[in-house]
Every structure is written in C-alpha cells, then in structure tokens.
Length: 385
Image (cartoon, rainbow, N blue to C red; front, side):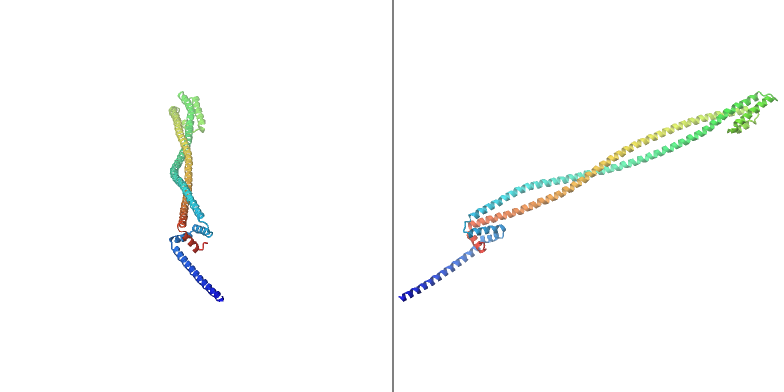
C-alpha cells in the first residue's frame, strides 16, 4: 500500500512538472507570437500614421480618448460618433469661416476702394486748390502793382495840383502888383491931366505982361507939384513946371497917349489873368477828376484785392484740408489693408489647421475601421492606457 502511494506521488509530481513545463512553453510561445504580432503591427503603415497623428495636439487627444474606451473594454462607436461630430463641427466652422471670409473680403474690397477713391479725390482737390491759389496769388501781385501805380499817379497829380496852385497864387499876386501900379499911374494921369489942361488953357489965353495969367499958371504948377509930391510921377510934375506954357500941349498929348496905353495894358492884363485863371481852373478840374478817377479805381482794386486774398485763403484752406484728408485716407488705407492681410493670413492658417484636423479625424476613422489591431497595439506600446 505504501509503495502504491509513493508511486502515485511520483506520478503526480512528474505530471505537474510536465504540465508546468508545457504551460511555460505555451506562455513562451504566446509571448513570442504576441511579440511577433506587435512587430508586424508596428511595421504597418497605419502605425506610422498614428505616430504622426499623435504628434498633433488634436490627434493626441483623440488617441487618448480611444485608449480610455479600449481600457474600459467599451465600444468604439462612441468614439466614432465623437469623431463624426468633431469632423462635422470643423467642417461647419470652415464653412462659416469661408462665408465670413467672403463677407470680410467684400467689405475689405469696398473699404480699400473707398480709401482709394478718397485718396484720388484728395489729390485732385490738392491740385485744383493749388492751381487756383497760384492764379489768385498772381492776381494779387497784379492788383498790388496796380494799386501802387495808382497811388504813385495820385501822388504825382497831387504834386502837380499843389505846384499849379502855387504858380496861380504867385501869378495872381504878380498880376495884382502890376495892375495896382498901372492903376496908380492912370489915377495920377487922371489927376495931372486936368491941371495940365488948366495950364494950357491959361497959356492959350495969355496976354503978354499980364500979371494975372502968370500968377494963374504958377498956381496950377504949384498944385501939380503938391499932387505929385507922394506920387511916382513927381519928376514929371517937376519937369512940367519948367516947360514953356506953349510946350504943355505936346506934353498933354503924350501923357494922354501913355494913360490910354496903360489902360489898354490893364485891360489886357485883366483879360490875360482871367484866361490864365480859367485855364488853371480847367487844368485843376482835370487833375481833380483824374485824382478822383484814380482814387475810385484804387479803391475798387483794393476791394478786389481783399476779395482775391479771401478767395486765395479759401483755396489755401482747401489745400490744407485736402492734404489732411489725403494723409488720413492714406493712413486708413494702409491700416485697413494691413488688417485685411492679417485677416487673410489668419484665415489661411486656420483653414490649413482645420484641413489638417479634418484629415487627422478621417485618418483615425479609417484606421479604426480597418486596422483596429494596429490602434490597440499603438495604444499599448505608447502607454496610452
């Protein structure tokens, strides 16, 4: 009985050893097969694609989500739905971005066209304002020259007026002096001649040796001497008193001729003076009219000058405003153009990124659908569990 038990124990021990060795062999074989399978799976192109996907932030998150599902032995249908929703969301965002880009692009085009039009209009405004300002400055120079010339002419005419009036006053003074002297001479003749006639009348009726007539002649001569005492013709009186009575007639005739000649001279002087006064008045009137005309023209030119200056200032302000508008439009155009370019650059970058994300999702979906073992292997190998 003991031997049977011993044999049984030996057989059991041998059997356990055999079974243990067989199990180890099976495990080794299974591990080999798994290692071989992993090696084969890691050589699959899909494995390399998953490595690329993991390098992307979105791809890494997707693979982590898949790993969580696999770790919980849950169905990947939820992941597939999530990927579809995510892809749909990205595609929707791209559609929205495309629509927004079309709207913003259209608005950018309108804004840039508006700025371009403002720049063009401001340039035209600057050119027009500067052209008109130049013409107005030329007109201002002409008006100023005209005003200065008219002021010079007025000054010349005024000087002529003053000179002519001085000459007229002096001529009138000289006329008065001459005529006064001549009138005094005529007056003297008017006084002397009656006395001389008296002397002559006495001499004509003279009777030799008559004391009365001689006394009468002497009295007449004495009166002539008294009359001529303060008169320019005193010498004539003195000369007359020495003449023979019979020579007085000749003297009277000469003196009457001289008196008449002086009267004629006085009349001629007066006529000449009147004519000179009239001519001077005519010239003075012409000068006055010329001064008045020049003064009116000068005033009109000065008014026109001020109006031209105001218009020039308006054009200068137009030019300044147009320059300001040009600078504002130019700066606005540059800023808006930069904004539009930055937006377009951002759109292109976002589009490239979305396209890449959508491509990653499609690749993951395709790998999950066709190479789930590769996915599982990749998750295990990269410790994503």
